[in-house]
Length: 637
Ligand code: ADA
Image (cartoon, rainbow, N blue to C red; front, top):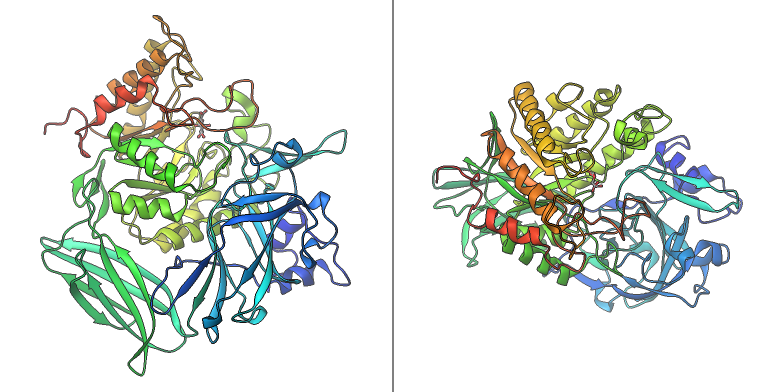
């Protein structure tokens, strides 16, 4: 039971305001009695023993400030309806909704299938950004904090098979210095509360991914972890199964044709595959591990796990996939589209992957938060490599100090990124790795974007997080993206990580329009990191804001020609260094930000516009990247 001083309890005191005036209960009792939403590691999937009902659609919707107290206790008294999945911010014309600070309420009726009697009945939220409280009829049944990872809540005791119930979900987009990403809420002269944050993309909130009602047997498969290796033509799949209840475990590994190629029993073991077909970037191959729980030789539960046999390793200055040097080409992306905000959209997902393939990209980073599971499943099936990032962006008061990078106060302090932030960050790492550990496309964890790694306190903050990540997954390399004022002279944590991932904007934020000087700075910077670390070096961000249709015969910033020249200069420098292992342009497409004098309708560093139209640079990248197939540009083929 959490004490009222625990970070999560405290978190509900600050930032995330409680949705209710507690009647005759203390805050501590309220928080302590909640059944927390359990991070959900196994994505619900229909099997002979499991069924699902999708709850996406149009739900009733209202703001806490416009609803009566304890609004979940009845049908929401609101004329509004919101789409699920979608962020709510851009759905309505009312600015008060768009930039609401506090809780919003979603509500709909749900009917439980008659055949689910005797089963456990759960709700599963693929994400609720950034915090959620879930009510079945009048009862609070659970909550979750963290806007980009799934959670489920067992509601078996609250509902009946064949019966209906009212589902109300309170969602808060609030950020405080005890959330990841961090932020703060300012109260203006008029008393208006405004959300302030230190990252450069709009703080979309709501039910941006799907909601499910699903059934599982009392005795069941609860989690599965697979680790793959190979020697010569023999693949090895090490597996570990966690059960709820007492049962035997049987596993069968099937190839893409459905033929059983290996089988075993026991909660953990090792399966060998002769003539293994490896999962490779650009050449994916997936097996399926069928995990069954048996009681008295009767299958009481089964769950399939997709398995790609591949290895990932950092050796010296090389990044190896299946023992072969791999060169990343691709993008930093966002989950961002018009109207839907961060709402998952399969049409954009399919088209984005098409455009990545068209441009010769073999990878992307999930900047700056975990993306929808469907995106990683798609990357597995299509052989695209993923750098999987937490939502830890903005851990840097230096950015408040402008280009000088001088923080007004220390980033790593109780004033900003303190113990509660650290606890939230650790939980984000647990849930990210717990959710994505079995994806062959995920080759590296990025545990923060542009933290103040140059500041005192950075090492004390990150050392325990690196230790946690390595305990949770010893198989994948770790990185973080380096902000431009974290240099090879002042960075304090790079030795804890495996790959140097640089975010650099020479020729944009500094030396704007002067690519000659910018080239000199870039060259010296990369050389410095090579001399200091001997590790693989890659660029996880480099780019220039560009207005499509703006042209010039001179090096004019914001023109399409400048974006092309900017990228070509960076590529010229990258190709001089054998230790350079990848280039991910910022950004794949234009995206929404907060209002800013340096933002013209959002961030325009996209290679594609927000509606995915190519700028000139898209064709330049295609000329450079197509046909590389993971090899370094200019390498001897
Ligand atoms: C930073 C940040 C990106 C984006 C970029 C920019 O590198 O990591 O999210 O804001 O700057 O476009 O300025």
